[in-house]
Image (cartoon, rainbow, N blue to C red; front, top):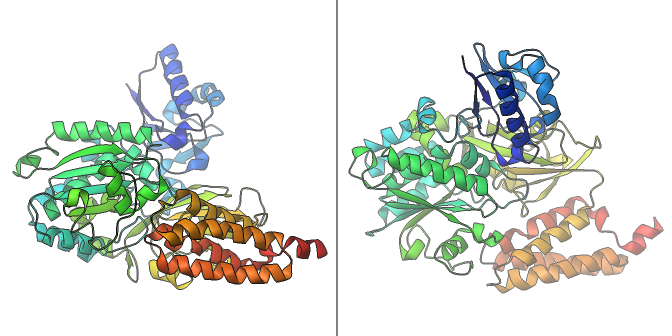
Length: 519
């Protein structure tokens, strides 16, 4: 009788040896004459336990991890294929407290299904959302998404239903759905996990979006550093086409939707939606003036819906279970769940999907386990390289879009990067400005020149005496305000967030060298 063993093919797991572990398990089973079905699933997101090996037993999946190549022999000796005891045994996977306390909606299948199997996807509830959408008219689909309270999970948090309604109402013979999969924020990996671990959910979400606004063609603009995601997506698209879920007649409905993957240009600015459109059209990635909005005049001048991976991957469950089901999670105007990516100096870096409302402290202490270094947490940057540096005194802020805006921060794509008390916050502020200077498309002066001058001013602050610091800090704050007010897009408009937050919460790190020497 064949035993099914799951070993992630996720890029994160591969980076810590999953491929070698899989090869050794295959070799050992062949040597011992054991019939094993080896499935390369997505990661469960518990990266401190990767490679995480799971075995399907009569009692459910049993997990072992982190498994190193040198552990494979002892696992077989311990009869792990039958759930045997071993020092790496974690018990039933679904009972691991870290997973059990989560509310996985968008990530419900990631780490569970075979990402290359359409049958496995359907067996776990896949395409039920599309089935529901196919018997609804376009306006009703848009209304479901609107009523769910889903907001864009890529950074701006704009209501998804409003964006779709704008595109639906725009008259045109050709419309497009574009998925922004150019995931470039520091400490983020949720998009990659979906595409590598459950690619069909993104395809289904984009297909529903196409039905909702009358679009017949979609593009996935994929980060060029994600070759594993590219292969997973292209294989899934081919399977969906062969089964009639994509093409000229989606499931016999008479409605067409085709989908293709386009590799990104490798520039951070192309994560901005209008720069993305420029790049997708074969041009240099530069920000467009708005209006017109992409939903009215987007790709090739046609009405275009642009959402990121997590946003589109959240759509199928809304159509399947209903708007009220999704809306019942969360708080305030932040409805549903948010996949939060914990990274940086943490004992347990991982993906956590929970409803809006838990606090940053719960994430860092309860899920992250505190710092890997064992030193006190000093700061956390939430929302990528343009997010504010938050001090420990603000860690009781709930994960909520409006709550973070109130403290001068943003949730962005849900990335949380943690720093211990050895961090130099002046250096981090300089890094934020330098990042903006390097990644700017150069189209607007506040971003192009302001970020370069910002780096120079921070250097003067750190190198100067008290009077030089005071003069330069006033200049830096004025410069940041100019960037906030005058930049064309969020790159220049939000680069001041980390700089100002570092100045406000960690002023001691900006003491000039003369001052530091005196103390």
